[in-house]
Image 1 (cartoon, rainbow, N blue to C red):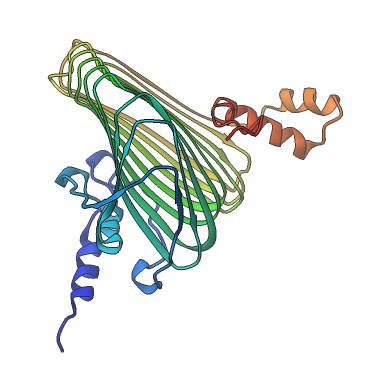
Image 2: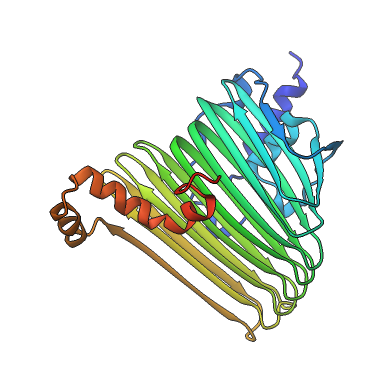
Length: 330
């Protein structure tokens, strides 16, 4: 019996690792839905900028199971050249939806990035950002709804460029995010604040990997989760400071608010330092609801559920404010 191309590709997919780094190989939450068993879904897309068709080429050390899926299913990429504030919106329905993008950032700007999921199937994106010399780029991203969401994003930073990311996922879903920054320019700066406020029986598998390749470059990453009943969260952070990253500055912070004994959290910060002339530190914490805070809030007339909701929002306040959730600007 002859083997089809699809069967060969599926076999290759099964052999790919979920992780590309040794530190995380045994710490991940695999997807339980089989992408090859789902029908294609047409994704509703709205962009405030024009694009052309192009092809994504991933380097070998960036290649993982879900990047492979995107190259197989998306059949190419949309390429954008942005020089002003822009807004992207995508709505994923039932079935499998795969998109790939290449985005060149030419001037100081903000990208408002919105994802909506409305089924238990599979939504996936691979995005590559090229941030030009001296450019300040703000990436504001929100993900809402229910389903399985895979997101691989790569930021390439040139000399004196900076990237600021504020991202929040809310709803009932499995989220697998892989965020990579390559600080290949002198004095480039990468700052990411990633938040998850998911409903019960949800999963968060989040990784932020930053690579300092040039002198005086910096990277900070904050991963924060509200973890409810029957939910599982893994925060993974890694800084790779190469021998060329002299006087580099890096910081990893991971926090999780644990709302139930029937939930679990893993914080896994890591650092690979090839030189001594750097600044590097990390912190990680998992904590339950503070009963003193609960007593104070409930003594002011709030119910216990409302008090828990307020504490959860407070953990993610800086991200919510940046996205404009409190005043409806986003």
